[in-house]
Image 1 (cartoon, one colour):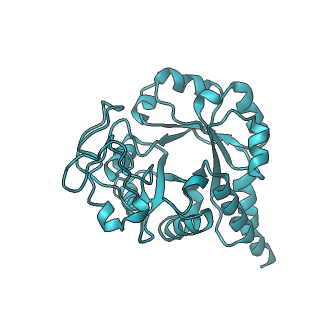
Image 2: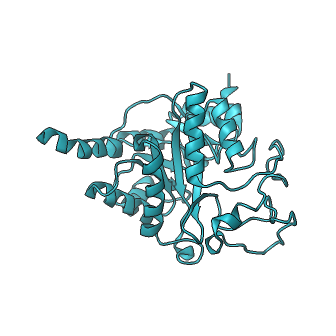
Length: 296
């Protein structure tokens, strides 16, 4: 019985610090933004159809405390339309944190398309709740007899937006954790963020036993050294996830020596996919999972 009491700590230690070679992790960025409207159920469904191992998505919070799948806490004029079908004016800021989810769901995020992704299929759709995506994805895997998918959930957080377009890290994290632990097995979850205060909070809660263990991924877009970023973070994460152009074979090897997996973002061109894979990365995040699957 005493051994059983150590199991949560043992699992946490394995998730946090061990590096083991695992099958290459193909992550569909925002579902598959290059092919379908980003962070929508059609994008996640298409990614599952293609055969990704992980669905990558972002979450924000609505006025009524719902966890919404969205990259930004604002509706962007570049691809969103108002409920009446009219365009959002350039510079107009429609803050999701000030709207109840019932109102958020009325906005169309797919009919306009996205000029940056000309292959993206135009179709009317909406920003779903995290609970809806998890429920539908789990059902899809069962119905289509495919292996269970993993989830990489990014908490979109930055200090300048605290109490403006988002809750502070503790409250934000608690809301997200409540949804995750209700709908899926946490061993299939990675929680990522650029906001190290979010990651520090999750790490503390897992050590305290308040949260069940998930893998934590440090998102990186800065030019600091690996050691400096890890010093700022204050612990060894399961995954280091930098912009792919910041990587080299030497950096990948350095991270692996520390027991950290390396999964760069957002790798869209076949040549770049080949390049980072040759460096020894453990996976990659892409808007075009179909391109990776078509590599020689």
